[in-house]
Length: 354
Image 1 (cartoon, rainbow, N blue to C red):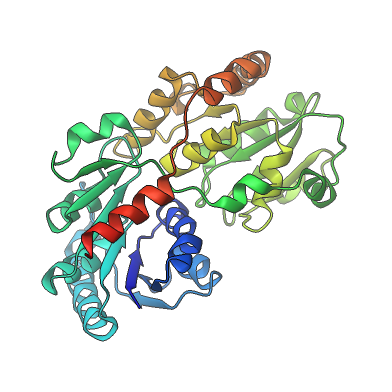
Image 2 (image 1 turned 30 degrees about the horizontal axis):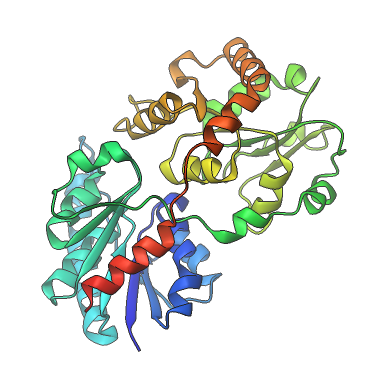
């Protein structure tokens, strides 16, 4: 039996594409294991999929000064040693890396043991973890056509993002039962990402009295970010993070407010959900979400509101305009052909282990 090790973590966006691969990998007869950090979000998500999970030490790789820069390299070295031991024990035929800091020692360990690696880059420009991993990978997959220019030509492959099949088969009636909403009023879904988004949460709650005049709102606000003073508010329901019921909520919603993580917006595209994207500010990141969002805006898939311009008034205006032109956005998304990203990636995996 062929064996594959999946890796990636730090945020749900580095994990959910791996989860999307699981059914087809199992169908193809692969024995699957996962290597992630000991206490990252990936541990809970992967163990829920009944996949053997191995935790290793992980340190963050930063482009800026932080005192942890002096200690985290030792965690990365320890993680490499632990991943190397796992390579000896598990003897995989291939490693598939979705990025994130924990993936770097795993990819380096695979290279040391002459195990082929495939990397997947979700964002428009490669992240630091994938940049470090590229030399060890014979193939590098990506989501955006613009990304190919940043990758070694002989390694690059435009595959798209693996989408979990269960997202496509949500049940609207089940979501109505879950939320207690009525079926004849529109529903807005607000998503700040698996770690939450303070600026988005604050703006939505500030505009809540006006938004609720028209919308019923499901707010996925992130761990520890539920506003207890709003519990029980009519037509507004909060969750820290939701997993099992997410497909049903997607089936229910008419409009989405979201950060612009690549995997999240690719899911919105596949689901044909008009969205207002509020990318994480370039001041607080390397600017990948801004690039992702602008790419979708150019293609007519989404409206973009920069975090620096986010106020109660600009949010309300953007939601109004998005709602008015909702069908135009749906039409643009319907005109975009969706490739079978999972099938394409499985084909590449098969190629590198022949």
